[in-house]
Amino acid sequence: MAKSISYVTGSQLLSLKRRPNIAVVDVRDDERSYDGHITGSLHYASDTFSDKMPNLIQAVRGKDTLVFHCALSQVRGPKCARRLADYLGELKEDMGIKNIMVLERGYNGWEASGRPVCRCTNIPCQGDSA
Image 1: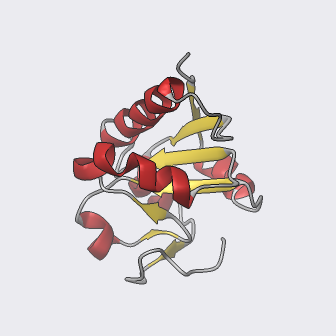
Image 2: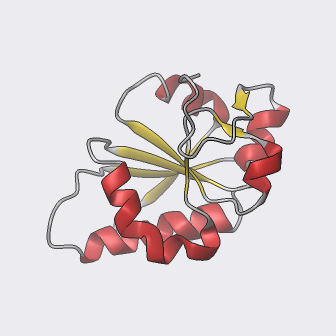
C-alpha cells in the first residue's frame, strides 16, 4: 500500500527540524549550487531521483519523516515524494519511514520568508540544524 503525502508549511518545518528523526530532501537540480539550500538538507536531484532512491533510503536510515522540496514544490518536489512513497509501498521490508511530506512554497518560499539558508557547497551539507 502506497503511503500518503501531506504538506508542511515553512513554520511547521522550522519546528520539526529540531527533531533528530527528520530529513529534508532537496530535489532541485543545478539551482541548488547557486541559490543555496535549507541547512542540513540532502540533495537528490529530480533528474536522477528514481535511480538514487536506494541511496536515499540508506542516507535516511533512522529517520521516520522526510520533507521534500524543489524551488516552488509544485512539480519536482511532489513528484519525487510520490515516487518514493510508491517505491516504499513495493518493498517487502519496512524502512521505518512513516511520514512523507512536501514543503509548501518550496525553497523559494522558505528563503523569501527569511528562514535560515546555507550557501555551503558541501555534499552532504555540513551546516548546523536551523
